[in-house]
Length: 309
Image (cartoon, rainbow, N blue to C red; front, side, top):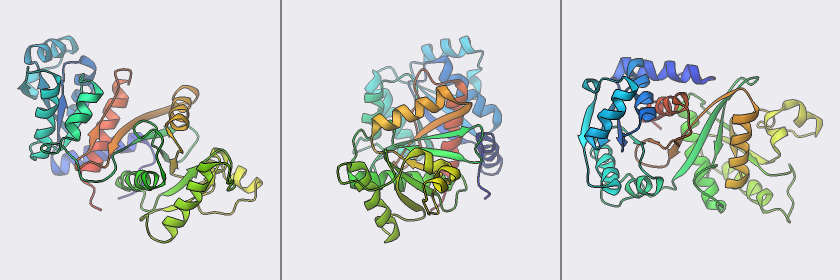
């Protein structure tokens, strides 16, 4: 497939998957929210997703009526035994193969993740679970993948390597055959007093020795020379990644969270995200996310659900 360079192209690709393979089934935990229902309705109308709505059937209907959505187009699983059980019921639909994607509705994040990680019916694989935001930013010719800005707070070297591997898989599902990954720090030189630069150098070496596959990783990079070829040239940095990064691997949640929110609020952009490392794609959105962001996250989950290798 061709590399997806915009999130509009991502939706078009998800629509193609829906046309060729049928809509992917999305199990939504506590689907008692008009915004979540509007997102899955948009995906349904585009032909790439079908919702299995888990939660209190009466509350789901009330929210659907509020949004003008006909529940005849959905499967509703009436589950009223509390949030924890809603999460378990929804995730079991995915682990049993009755659904393809696990999505958070109004359920609290701790209950959602507890279901995701349940040893009996969850989606554990033994791999590190991580999060990736992906962004279309005006003025750039590619999608940026930023990890991990939401799940792993202060990852050690091994966890960072796992986060990168997870993110490479997502980028490749978007058609980026060999993603260029910039391992970020405050500076672009190794400084023994700055642990992030030491981790970046180690990850670079791990990739070169084949411990991290299907990408080109380099670092440390400051943000400017990771995304600006002019800045990299000015600083004399010679690297296949300099100025051309697809993946931005952040040192910790503080740096990542601020970077993502700066992109959202200070640029013209489209942004969405996924949980990675589970046995099926996982959509974890917040109540503040727009309908578009939620729909884009579903589209990304659809792309990831059919990716082989």
